Amino acid sequence: MPYFLLKNLTNISFSAAHRRVRQALNVVSRVSKDESFMEFYEPSMAILKQSVEPLFLEVELKDESSNIELYLENCWVTRSLDFSSTPRWNITVDGCEINGSEYAAEFCPVPVSPRVRHPSHFKRLAVRTLAKQLEQVYVHCLVAACSPTNTPPGSTCRGQCSSNTERKALPGHHSASLQGYVLAGPVRIVAPDLR
Image 1 (cartoon, rainbow, N blue to C red):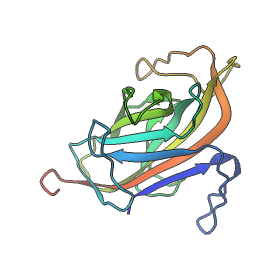
Image 2: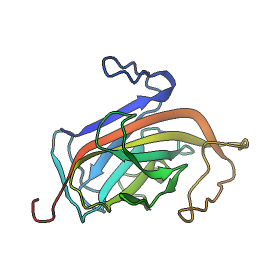
Image 3: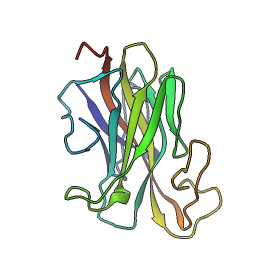
């Protein structure tokens, strides 16, 4: 069964037996059936992706304020739903896409639509598997909510990347001190002819 979870990192214990969650940042993640981001897998649906198909992940900040921006600080892929499991393969670091040896990620545009009133509340990723092995995976993301105010040096919210190694600063953005964690999966990566 796919998991779509939110956890606020300011008051959480990652113990397997007990988790305390204080929800301050309302963030949800979903896996889209294709690049249109119009149809999504339900939490009870099995998610099967061929190894040649990208996984389309959408993360949404549920907030009415139009001047808040969602920022994907770090996202990674693991074989477990456990936050601290290893091995892990980074797909974003400091908000920038990473193209590693196992997985590659690319941000997708978020246009205004009947479902998307504030594009700044959404982030979309196309995640491709580059490995030959077939497995069950989970996508984890640490997120932050950013608001347009004076930016202190070393701010968490740095803006979008223009390439895999270069960052563009967005003047006037900084962390609103609200951070969260989302988890999507499991997604079963299968051979192209087994779906």
